[in-house]
Image (cartoon, rainbow over all chains, first blue to last red; front, top):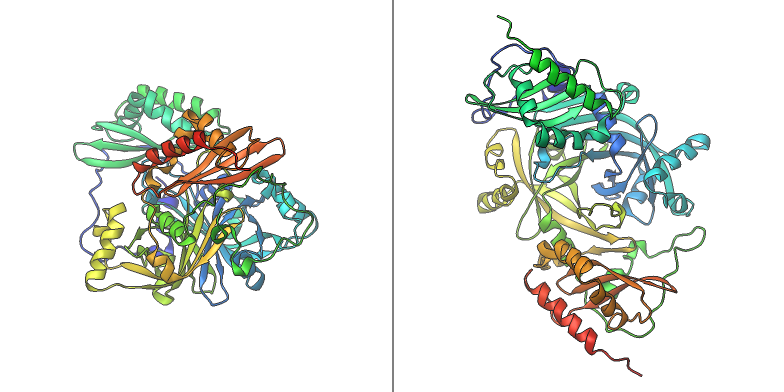
Length: 282
Length: 282
């Protein structure tokens, strides 16, 4: 896995000061190819692209940060678009104080731990867009909420775009990073994301033997007893292996990044082929 | 439906100042019995009792309200319990500024509008509980997150209880209320809530004729063509009717509040009996 995404961000570059460490992670039995990962910027853009609602933190008149649930659109540069009313406390807050942030979390598959899922916070200031930007922003919001075109015309509603000044991405336990706003704006949305959940289920239900073989060969865990695909993206798969020596997360990369949801099938077929052809090097 | 819950809260007691009103609601064809509803306090306590995670708004060092996703427990008085690390921005924020708020949203059934679901914001100050309160708070959190017992012992983690000073409940479109903290603390959690989603599905899939009959008789819409149960709780059912004159929301109350999930069956059987026995008055 890449240093970029597994490394703690500067402000988190410390270890828990308490009793003992977490459960032991088994070391690989042989070296595996380094595998590409989405950058934190790509993770954040991809997560935001799929979000239809999120949490807004605005500042209430008494100085209390105010958490609320908001409907979201997203601009081509990854900026959240809100259409909010001054009849709601958050709407009145934004009129008075444009500084705010929006948090978005990956949906949790049934039975999964909600803490081990990706989430982002985008912080900055909301602006009221004008001209073409206003039209584009409302359209971005209305893509998820067609009725917003009607709401937005009411006098108490305002369409806002969040100008992103800080991006914080958390990928799950111990995967986190701060992303520069320019990097966030420029990062690519993973085109395979809409198919990832079903591809993951398909691998685990119908190709568990194949995933195990990948882990034993390309993944570096010759003694893996079980292997479960935990995520799939344009660059590869995240697999959790169980070995007699404990468990471990394994990243296995595709030969080429997938460019569309349909590419995931070919990419995993190529992995299976590579795994069957794999031979231990000394 | 009761004035208490359908009425807009004081600070929202105004109407949209823009073009036209929403879609027309059909009036009843005959008078229906007033039907009890959960109070906003009961709604809020019930929603909070089911929440395992939520959104935290804390105040960042630069003055920006910071939205983040947090794991939640809840005390016997409905106070959120957080176990957070100073390795995370929200953890550092709470050390510096205890004022914060937590928002929790009802899970959205697949295909439903996320804006037409219940959500609450609880605002106040976090405190670090001591003695028995500390033990109870950690246990409340660990009920959802057993590993929290381990985390909480790390030096960078703190267990906080949110002392609730303000409660804002939104039940969906145009249903909202501010709840006094004392009322919130004292309100009962709906004991039937864990069974509500499956009971609703069961009514719509297997007893749609019965729901339609309730609407035509007890519900006050003699010309209802279709009726769908949108929610069920200890006091009754929310039904959406379609008539040749438009659609309408209908509340139909049970004769007695249900005291357990198992009571819902008897309560709906009693409704069916009452609907069959119903005769138009006048």
